[in-house]
Length: 195
Length: 195
Image (tube, rainbow over all chains, first blue to last red; front, side, top):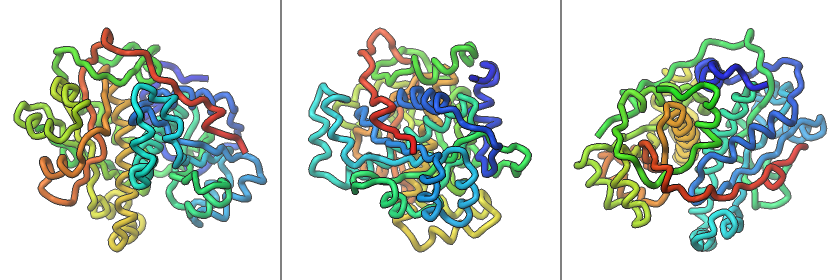
């Protein structure tokens, strides 16, 4: 199930790729839930954990999602065994008395919607990244996407304004034969400096 | 250097913690740079890679950073061997002709500052999360923080409005004896649903 330990970093980073084409192999619920159990341990500011997930796999749910995605992502979403809607809860702060009990962290947010939005986007992105790497550690492949209409996804999957879609994430076993070469990365010296 | 492979997931997730107290052990540049080389491989939307890093370790640079952080984070930052300023470049799109050459991705951003801001925050957070897990994979400990004045950090470390601080990240060898119990996590059923 979990890849050979010696190759785990390769599985999570060096050999991992963003997939657009998928093998016709099912994705066991247990692997996705095991990945979540790892990912939820990653740090968030004030332990706020704003990420919420809708794991779309039924044909009926896919039918609701497909009209919301860009033409370039349509076939990717249609053929992926699972497409996760990675969203954040704009009322995440209501959980803080339980998640961060030693101070009134809830009060930082109740009258500051701009801080709620920034904190939700930042921390659900952190959690989404932990989830991507944890899914890979379970031997699954990922295809994250920003090409979609977030208002449409929100309307199709969330009854309340409370939830905001951050990004979409195809999950499955990727088809390596259809990968193109990896795109270039910025080097350390272009991105970072020691001071 | 790298921990025993069998325990790598434990090192990156289960046993990893957010540290506030640090051992007096130096952080080799090579480990941080090796972590970056892993982290830069993680996916970003349109391969945009907006994250920029200032790795603060000299006493002079620490002196500039300390007045920008909240009182609760002052000692953590003062005693950490390295504090990374995880920022994003608001002109990240100027690199897209090189990073995403097969379409005019630059044009998506040139007249849409709100999209620049959202894309910068989302993707520098994803990259920051990859960096946290990659640092842990190198045997280093992390302490990410949102308690600081981003405008002050920007003014102290970036000459141009071009760069925006996202979060701060202490890096070192943590003092396990001073950890408190891990804070609670939301369960899968509270956060996710299959559809």
